[in-house]
Amino acid sequence: MRKYLVISGFAAAILAAGLVARAGTEGTSASASTAGVRRFTLDQAIITALQRNPTLLIAEQEIKRTKGVIIEIRAQALPRVDASGSFEWIDPNLSGTRAFQQNLPSGTGTTTGPTTTGGAESFVDSPLSQVRDARPLAAPSPTPVTFIEQSDISYNISVLGRQLVFNGTTWPSIRGTFFQRDGAYFSFRAILDQLISTVKTQFYQVVVNRELIKVQEQSVHLLESQLKDQQNRFEAGTVPRFNVLQAEVALYNQIPLLITAQNNYRIAQLQLAKTIGLDFNPLRGENPPLEVVGEMPYIQRHIVLVDAIELGKQRRPFLKQARANVLNQLEQVRATAGQLLPSINTTGGYEWDSSPINSSWHDISQGWVAAVTGSMPIWDSGLIYGQVKQQRALLSEAKITYDDDVRQVELEVQTAYSNLQQNRELITSQEKNVEQAEEALRLAKARLDAGAGVQLDVLNAQVQLLTAQSTRLQALFGYNSSLAEFDRATGAQSTYSESFANLAPRATKTKTYYTGSGVDAEGKPKHGDDSPPRIPAKRSRTSYSK
Image (cartoon, rainbow, N blue to C red; front, side, top):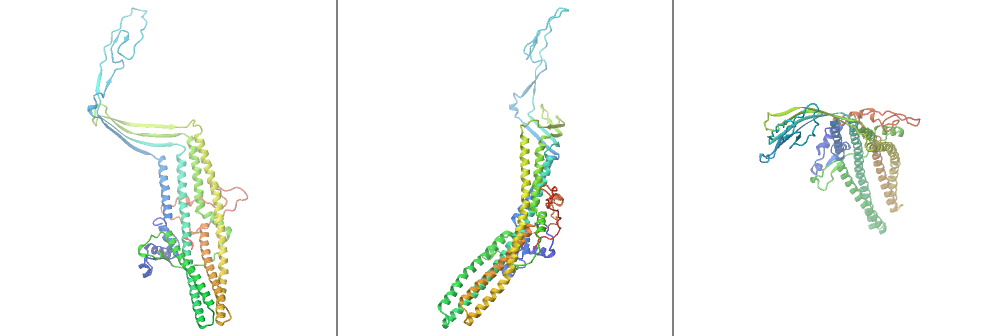
């Protein structure tokens, strides 16, 4: 991955191959470069795909997105400082009624005798004094009414800081985002393994289609020479016209097979170009988008099925991603149940308020403000309980999915192992069969030349040889593609030294994501006599298996 993915292993050879693939046409022939056709070895094709494949690039961006989610959720638990302000101006022409009346507490009217008139309240007459005669109270003087004109400008500025003290949802949510990031990282690794397997399979498909073209061309050339020989014999009067017609029919039946093989070869090249991320180059015209350099290898590998299954459980990022989903869902249950706990927040800061009677910047009110707020649900008619019940059901679903994923890994490893056995046996049988078919064709031609055989024997022998050669090539392709799938299913397609700059989370290096036998969906040890032994995986630094 450009500046993130550091591929170890294969030393300078692989790195040099990456430079060739990145540069484009370096290392190509003059004719291929002129036609805009790029040549790739298997290593170059894989490295180019790691750099340019859009699915892998999208997976990398998903890791960055989950890191942004972590920052977002974590910010809820960290201090926050906000500055706010308001400013208001009202035209003085609209301030005719913008006066307020400053009243004294006794009222705004005048009072006479024991009863206040013009005020908002009246007093109840009190009984006469029994000590002396009652004297009328002096009438209070009317309270003056003061009208103060408001300022036409008002403003407010505040700088407030907020800090979460405690709640039951934020911390589990933060831990859940960590597992989301880990899941995105393991998804990236799973896509990378699948990409390497796909490039290998498509590369070998191009190679086998190219070899099939050669087989078909050899068959066509042989039938052409056979037709020419029969025509010469017919002109010499040694064979009937029927032999010439037989040879012509056999030749024209073989030509469509050659055309189909050529078309399959072109389609395979286009598919490989799409996978490794090559854009259409108008300079190449109708030429193929790329050319592959290499042959179909046959490297036997000794495999123990039990060890392969255990290795697949321990190394497959597919299972580690499922483990991250289980752990994330567990935190979601805790976060939902945390709503039952109290929530406490603090707020503090400084404020500046304008004077209500003038617009002077020096006549302002200012000071500190502080507040502590808390809340706790008392009765919600089962709202939180229902949410917790949903999250627990989702947690159970994630655990069930994990257990099924373990069985899926076992199935994939056993299927790939069975396909390897089949193709290995086919290769062994067809190697001997090709030799026998070649010998049978040679004898049939010798008998025909000697006049002891018939042309039909030669044609049948040619068909048998073509079938044997095609079957052997398909078996070689099946073996290599099955081997690539086996490496992917066992997690041996690529290994990691965790040298992903700012990409691999630290938790991926711990035992949190050990997914071998003997642990459940949460990574806890299984209890029971039927739990298989825990076999540690061997560490390797090879970038990918060829």
